[in-house]
Length: 581
Image (cartoon, rainbow, N blue to C red; front, top):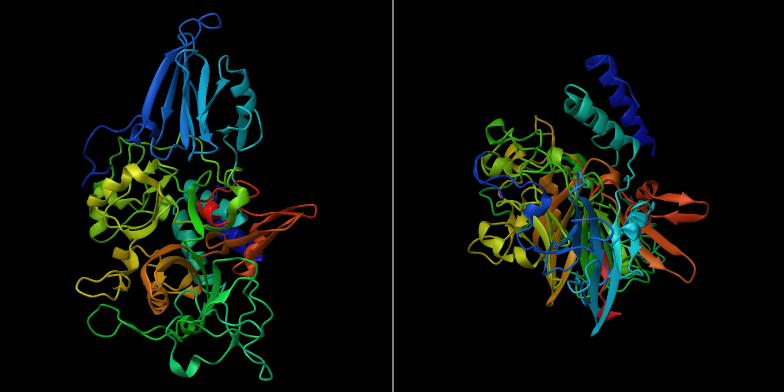
């Protein structure tokens, strides 16, 4: 964690001594006009259903309960609202269904003050009025407090964990004049290649190791012929693939004890150049990124479900400072007409009901600060094209055309595409979605071979969050979808230092049909953990060993990020399918 503390101290010192001596270091439209802004996030939910009932007046006269299904198709989240004349503000309770597939919850109109929970032909009544049990659950320190004998959870507001780096950058952005420039300066001058990993030659006296590449896994990468048989050691790899002195670049290896999980290593300079979809040859890779290690993990989607959750703090819902002023409506707190998720609650961790099935998690996308366009065509439409996101059917920020989107439908299908207005027809069946910039790899018109995204080499229009002089090399992460023999795989890639063109080259070499950027610059933004459960403990492995610094320990017990405690950043998680166990 020394890197985090160093950049935090350096950035803070610059802020205090140079620019801010008084500081202390501890649905969118084509423009700002359009329809009336939503009052709260509930108004963004086009597929909600609401019912109300008058409550018994023996306790409070004139009390009314309103039960809002936030997404009737997903059936995961509800908002219970209590009002009565003497109450200055309504009481809100964000409630989660522990079994959205088979459990249905409504107000009991015949017995006001009760919820009616139906499951497997049985109906159970759960009293919520008077609201003593609700308030007792709200006072719990748990992010998910059980209600109705554990059949429901009350989502409680908690503080998400963050590192010294995270705290300092937020302080600079929120409170220091030109804070973003300070952050950029420190990253550019001191930390551009701070996390670079380089391969080492395997022992001359060894074979590639006892671990053998899988024959029926994801598609292997196209590697230049003279390098394809040379095993290399990757000391930074934190996933067990069996005893080995080296791995063959571009090949896939089975993660030990994890069905449907595979690991690969690569270097951008070793993979073969295929079809960029651009006229002429692309700009060459530089000498540093050519040899920088890439660590990849693939999940066979027939074995897994994909989930997504927002962090307690990020991404925010306000305007990005990157948004062009002609696209910003100052009468609105954010591009969707809201500035916070209230009265809904963001927990920043996997629900307890899903944790036993959770096998892996990885950090999500950019914060709202960088999640909009300052330059190019996307900067001038749809209120600067802020990245959208949906969790469990709840729209926190609308999906915007032209952006790369990783999504999950209510039937579990995982897709990745550049969003269009025509795709809005899927919203009523959308369980999760996360947008993040423009594509690295995308389908090419008139060709069966996907090509590089049209903006891969365009710093400003592509919003690659590099420096203004186009020094785009940095620690980065991305994801792609690939197919092999009718089997589909979600691939996560960690690039120890790379430009977008290096990412596109590697993902294309692995046969990805579509690829998108996730986040960058630090291990906390590119974190991936793999979980296996023994009889008495949880084993946690990280794609890169250094990522372990983001977890916490209580005595001898390890609490992994996103699973053991709430985090301020958004993330994806993979769960074993119940029908494949």
